[in-house]
Image: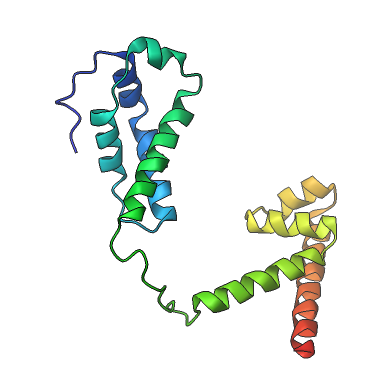
Length: 169
């Protein structure tokens, strides 16, 4: 989509042009959330065409990015409401998990998370953030070898909790 035909005369239009890439990323995130086709460029292009306001009104807006992100979010929601196939049941995933199995797994994860100590929760979060053992060690003010050992103990604890839960059912 070309932006060349637009005359960027007022402040709003200049802001849209300057923030175009960011706005497309925002639109893409919302589209991905609703599992819609990636038409972020089109959403932002339509925004540039349809949004009209005076410089005075534009200047009164305190957080301009948040204002535009909210408009994009609403546009994507409107698109989602009218999207064909929106009410179709979710298919089985390639790995055989159904939405019901995914919900059950989510509940299991929540139950396990509640049984962890605060340090264990923090360690788990750092691991899922893909932090290195050196970074984890620095956060806990311990040696990297000790961080590895804590991780191994946490994995063992989680396995036992899962096993324990399976034995009860």
